[in-house]
Length: 550
Image (cartoon, rainbow, N blue to C red; front, side, top):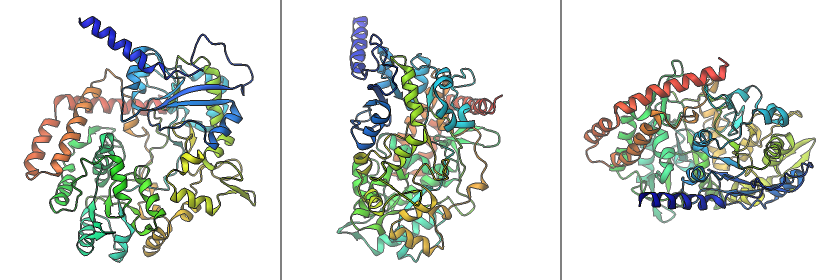
């Protein structure tokens, strides 16, 4: 009986992923013509993908230049089982960005080693990564390259998110005070809410969070480390000198941040729906202009800012702040360098890996980088005095239409493929991305400009500590460290994350915070997690050795 159920499950798993295999994956089919522009379709699964039929203007231009079309698949409704199902069936899309499941694919033998392909067909890949190519190697035990990407190479952090973001209107009403600590923020939103109990006919909300699925990491988990002056290492606190790693919620100072959130909740300043609302509800709520404070990443809340701009509520858009626990803590601006994170790989189901790597190599060319970042000349940008310039009308569309990227294709085919970061210049001395300092300043809405003028600054970046005061990380970011599936870290972190995701919201809403925090720490601090701390430390040290060529 058990064997029958197992065979049935495997059959269902195999059927579930069959649809992912595009016409480029059938090994019985003949190879494509020698002409590299012969039409071909690669199936592509992206763990961070969204619905995309590859028919927008940029997609059409990519096909015109390369002959390649993409049949894009993505997780629906938070489904994170697609990669395990692929592994169970042995059938894969041609190209895949598996994010945290990349290690599973490597261990299953599902990804093609790219080293020889890069040597033969990847001159632009080599140019783009430069000295960072070594950071793409999988591990100190397996030094092959299996994926390319993700994130911009040599990226300049000109648009920091900060630890918190507050409405421009709140800063203006208070006379643009210095806002450095949690206590400063608390006083601002408390006073403003008391003064303006409603906004646009709805009840004013002091602060809102979004704990929907994995997003609890972004708005509930990550800010706790930021206010403590820690670098962005995901669920880990890492000493940059000794590389000692610790699961970050074990840090005793964490209690102070969540005590602060507990105080906001008890005083009616924290949205009671923070831990039940879905992401779409959260964005819709921010878009009304009645939420004063958030603690989020711009890519996560940008649609709300765009909607506010479109509805003539620029003063209700959110301004990033470098808020910390107290005035003794300095906000951390450590640059991870190139993180070496898992990116796009070619699977063993791909019938033509040579054509696939040539396509990825083309995406690394100046032509492709400009296309993906700037768009089509004469449509999305113009050449003025030999320089690429985005017309104001096009900027306005970008800043007020949340579907601008989907309609134009701009920004849709950079991440998670290889890309240059902000601040990198092409041979003409122009930036590959549209995020030059001048363009960033020009894109600020009037409320941003007014806030910056009041503080005597030109850019939001100027409100933050100087990045030069922090050494560049020589291990990237801990959340990108590749953890073997049989590592004790895997199970221990999963248990710790599940416990924290469940308990932290309860703590924030607790009437007996101190006792409940003690109980949470007792359940969290297991021997298994201590072993995971030790193993993570070893992996980080091994990464430093690998990247340094030891």
